[in-house]
Image 1: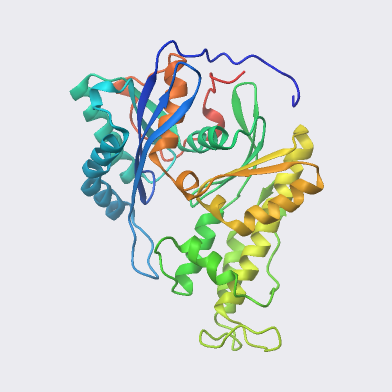
Image 2 (image 1 turned 120 degrees about the vertical axis):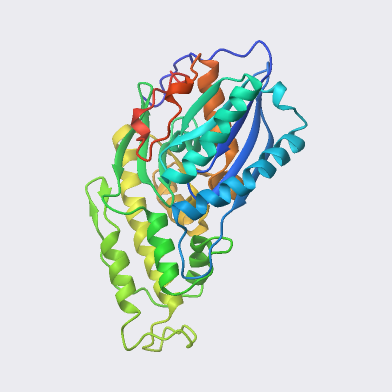
Length: 364
């Protein structure tokens, strides 16, 4: 319960520990090196990332994304080691994303992790992608016992910790919020550089009209496929124009108006289910993780709700919100320090690896 102090089972290290984390569950390929020192401090030694970017109007296919990862992983790992000033021999373990994610990209990165482990005789630690986000978010922000809103291209969950598990209180019933935003960005032909979600956010700042869209929270869960379909339907409305400037007086509907309406409605739904979880567990902290967590409007809306409850919102910038290797290194090293390693025979990847399946041994 909040306010109840429990001693962590994770003992202070007697010597420094260093881990390499490899992430490649979607279109971001990352390698990060983290250090847990004997004084209890944690240091990010390097955090290198390369993104597979497709042309406007196109998504990224598993086969093409895996090809990108195979092409770039050597240079990403090399740059990560160089920035950290360490050699592979200095590592205590090699951590990799076991799932969830896209099958072919996951397998491509796991294969490299296995190869390095065998070549340099290093233990492997398979990491749940979401737990990586949470642990890096907790480390960077200092949040103690937050309700976690995990929002990304493949996942949308409201999570709280209890009895060495990250419990899922609510989640999407169909598509993830990042997938919803990315798909609409393709509909209106926004660029994928640096990311479609970021460009939706910038376009939404120009919007002048809040158009009616389905508001579909269902208890602690929410549904996003209907709101995407309705927003797309507006692009076939005779009032829709991609060339007219947004105006509150005009009857015209612009892409900026649609981006604004989509963001406001979806984020309001996320705030609602997060507030329910806060009330349920009695927490006054919200930690936003995942790629969509970079969105400043989402942070603002969540902040208003949290302040009204006398609470705080914690979020990180794009270095740690967007998929990265350092979060895998952090979660993996915590697990490794508790004595957990992944045998080579169990290093296969899984596209469906739920957050609440992980035994969080390092927390009380």
